[in-house]
Amino acid sequence: MLERILVEHEKEPKTDECMDMMDVLLAVYKDENADYKITRNHIKAFFVELFFGGLDIWTNTIQWTMAEIIDNPIINARLREEIDSVVGSSRFIQETDRPNLPYLQAVIKEALRLHPPVAFIPREFQEGFNIGGFF
Image (cartoon, rainbow, N blue to C red; front, side):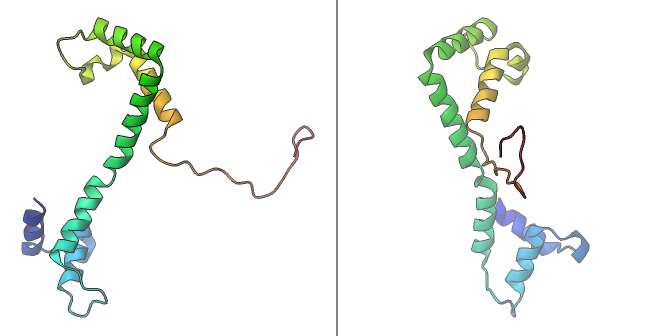
């Protein structure tokens, strides 16, 4: 697929105002005077990393959520009961079932709160101050 996109971009190069990342990388690839030489494989590897690089974050979040559910048998039982009563055991949960599964939504939100998929940057104060006698 990436090879096809590369060929399409080579056939119809865009102007400076409409260039996207693929066009920029192809321009560097074709530039004989570029400081750093890249190959077509470099370009394809870059886009593969770009497309699939974020999957690991969500995989970790799902694993933490499952670990939390397994670690709490009461939550696991209540989730199973809610899913069985709304969806049943004959099919998978679908997007249209979401409004009818409030406990599942709450469990997912709590898991995202406990194990966010991105790191939070703590706030730092510019200067110290006192509130109610506390520094």
